[in-house]
Amino acid sequence: MEKADQINPKYLDVSPITKGKRMLIYLADLFLNFIIAVTLFAAMVYPIARVIASSDDIDQDRNINEQQRIDILYSNDLLDYDENADTKYNINESLQYSANLYLLGFLNESFKPDYFNTFYVEYLENDYQYLKDIIHKQDNYGFFDYEQDRLVLAAEYKDKFLPLLDDNDQLSNTAQADYDYFINSFFAHIYADLLNEMLTSRLITEASPLYEYRILDSENKRMTNAENMVAVYSTYVSYLLSSIIYFLIIPLISSHGKTIAMMAMRIERIGDNNFQVLSRKERIINSLYQLVFALPLIMFIPVMYIPITTIFSLPHLLYLSLISTGFVLISFVFIFINRLHRSLIDFLSRTILISKDILEQIYTIKGYMK
Image (cartoon, rainbow, N blue to C red):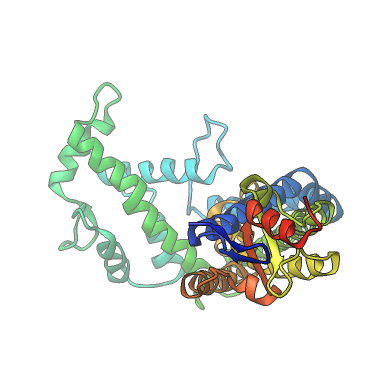
């Protein structure tokens, strides 16, 4: 509990704020600074950076690149699309449409289209057993019979899926669940392996009609990386600006050098050697420490514009957040093991956090503050 017990007119027993309040102050400063950074990123820094980097042109080139890659799949009988729908360049829709055609080929025993046979046997010149092994590895439901010379749909699933051949019939609930798994998991996983093989296989040389897909993919990754770096640099600038505003400008304007969180909780930062509020020079130095210790959330600043999965793949932000989080955890240990509940920032800046009431009592005894 905070207390300021007057022993005599010249002495005062000064107690710091509690451990809980000290950590709460840090977390409040952390989140308020984060909110300012996110606002700056979304409203000003990132839009300006995109204009400077001609990001709209890059996005357009990347879209053209993606369409060309999909066209390569179409022209080489590795994917189909519904000509009656405006989904030619929607890869997810095309994959579902193609998966359905693939399954229908086994139901009506036309065995067409067979994208995997086309790729692994015709283009890569593997034997058919190699293809059967690939499909068998993913076939957790036992969709196919692998004992015959070629893949055939297992009798159980052929009966279940026969309604697909009749527009006036429909699948049972059980069959529908199996169908959804076939389309969205079984086929999708094998096709993902196919695309990965197209990018890495040594059997696809420059003479192959599929080699252009690899070139376009490399170019697409280069453009995506350039776009990601625009977001990374915008994050750095946004964080620096927010930290200057929150940890430097506001404390410099404040008569006692307080952040917004300290104002709200009536907390004061004083020097551990003179029990006075910090001078302007000391506030500037303290802001540098706070800037470093507020880094854990920096990786989430661009979250409004960049998918969270992409954010975790950006080492420039991820590692910075992880390393700074380590410093914060060490700082929390400091709070718990020292009697004045001082964090690592407090030790570095040689300060103590106390309540406003105690500061007023200190200055009253010193005789120069009401």
